[in-house]
Image (cartoon, rainbow, N blue to C red):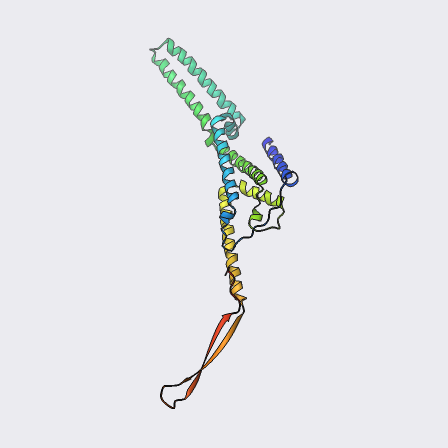
Length: 259
């Protein structure tokens, strides 16, 4: 509950910062050519999404390798963590006691067996604590934390970098703070969703450009020219003549480049 309340407060603070505190300038809407590649147009957003994703991966790798207690708390809970730590301490103490007795009675087979059991118990306890990253609880907590932290970092990057996706796409009607906020959420969603979004936008743009070119061709007026030519029906002298008419149709306006 504390983490949920903290994330809610951070989210509200982030929205207030974007809309009322950060100095966001209105970006000029870009003019996209008919054959424009949206991957190049949205390259800053793609790079930012990849950077946020790599940052989160690095942070979680450091946490999993350095702070086992935090990982165990997120994966199994505080009671399991306390129990696992007590088991490790107990196994270490038992191993120390058995080792002391083994040193006193080095040749005793019973003590040697107890020493092996103590060593195995310690190994099992430490492995149980170290393998907590594979638990379902920790994976769920990690996924939720990655989503929330990714969205927060995405909004921060978009605000500091003045990244406005709608302006890049030539849409100038979206207010700058809203544009930055949506761009930040897109960046924070990860590189794969951003690539998918770019692909969908590219297909939609190509379809609209094709439809526009087709409508332009349909709306182009044409003019007809009629040519009349008189030819004899045959090469024999005195043969009659026939009239041949040819009609050529040409557009009065040249097609637009998009067609």
